[in-house]
Length: 258
Image (cartoon, rainbow, N blue to C red; front, side, top):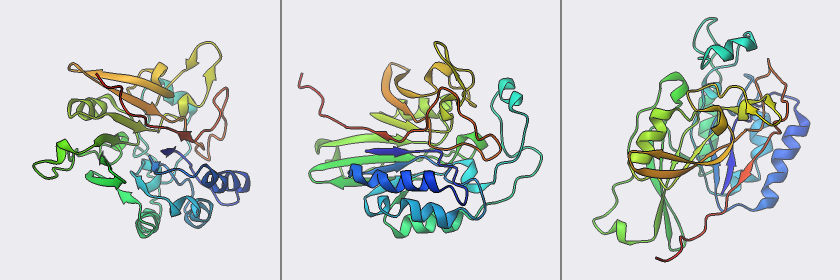
């Protein structure tokens, strides 16, 4: 399972495009895209060219705010005051997100924007649920696919997908039996202090969870949570420190028998 997030594509980013193009060599069984693909109104074409080999594989996706709206310049110190909501002034410019999502859908990738769907791989079924971006309060949880009266008896795993890992979203995923949660948005903190870690998560997620695989706990249930540090940055803050870009390759293995 190849987890992509926060590409933030801008035209003429050849190195990024070449790197994305080469990810198909990993031959994933499934691609999960957790949003913020764009950072420029003219980036849809270059992004689709870079992802063209990966679009040949099965995939699912949810949007981030920077799929809908272009980033705007803001003082980076504002992030220390709490989550930075991009719909505040100045008014952001809408991006051609419908073109992007239509292309993803035409390639067979499943849109999980406030909806659920099952995907079958051989004798295994993955029940997906996803939400629109909680960072701009567009999340409306749809639950998991209902299935047939005997669907629980067949081999399956429940996977939840969101762009921004806000705690309320992680809680309702976990309460509903998620067995894996995938998110992005944080950029891993983008600027990390060696020996300490991220300074901000741009959400209410604790900063020590801003990157990597941890376990989320709520109401007696737990679920593995993978937060990708992402691939790009806002074009107005193109700096990472001690936080390399990443795409995450996850291998799911069977649980040990009791």
